[in-house]
Length: 554
Image (cartoon, rainbow, N blue to C red; front, side, top):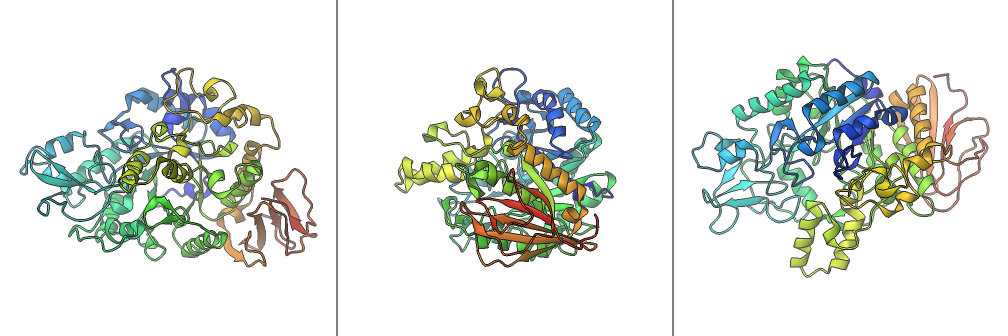
């Protein structure tokens, strides 16, 4: 992997189903993305991460693939994909495709063959086990609720599915299967794709002795049994040498279960991935029960995650920076104040992301400050995880009202509402009836209203991207957190070749005294319309970036 462009990149994530519909069927598609390529380019981003676009029954938002070589018909054709790739490249933008190699759809021909008989040649492409009497082989829970094992009547055995029952896990222990997966990777890389985002790559090697989990903490079960298995490093090295090294491609691995202690094992320059997504901050408000078992979090906890992971990558390896994506709540609703200080807190969060070490990944709509969507009842949800979560909650006697509070806080529907392009019908997303309800606040929060607003979230996002690109210190510099007398302040220092840049963030809805004298320093950017280099307090959700006195020119 000779290419290192990812270290200077700012990546824009597109969830195709909800981005832009070009043909009025209510579903976003590839031609819709092509229509918006100039908009994407105008953001200043340098790459696009595209969520799965392969043929799929769509049980889990396209992460259940039935044909790795075909485009989902709702999204368009292979010709549309080729046109999209060409359009990106002509604008100097890279494409990172989302490849799901831990599991397939149960409608994939491999699984259809696998389930026919115990001696079928494809049987070993998946994990099949006898049950314990009338029980599943072990007590592993699924990410989406219930058991991770499904009894198949045809042979009387269970198959493993860490996610939906329609997403059987692929058995990477099988060499023939691994060769098939390599062919898939080569197919897309031969087309000129610039990067691969490898979905739950940490789970491709798991505990194949299948012991019972000994903890009720779901995230601990992930770490101990589902991920970081004994052959993970070997499998990554194999695809690296057999496939990836033959293309100018970068890889980003989704790493649930990965820890600061083992992360660098999978980021080796000769044998590993280019970078990873870790989930230290994204899981910190989840209790033992996972997504629908929320617990309080503090800014100290939040700061500690960045401190630990930035320290991990201080000398080798490379990380990513993200505060939201298709699997989590909207960034400003989760980490900011999406009511009174929506604009200020959205800008503050972008200041954090774009001034941090690692490659920033921005989820569609966050650049205009889109917020969470409130489900009024469970029937409005389009997400299997929420629907299954409700079924589990009902068994425990929980009311729909109580479960909705959790789903509206943490559910994945929040991020999947259609992109808000304008205040017109369906937010300008589609001329037809959208596949999912549009957030009612699209009349106030949309691209059209912000395009000519110099004080809007969109304009600020473009400015902070330009700032990162101007100052190498923000991309390559060291990171040092600074202790503050108030735990609602987050202040850190970036330093490179004698240049020092201080970033100060007020994570609260009240003014707080600023503990440093900045009168002789250069204010590079602030998220309020007016700012003074001699500030003595930070206003609610205020963010400021200073170049410190005596710093050398970048």
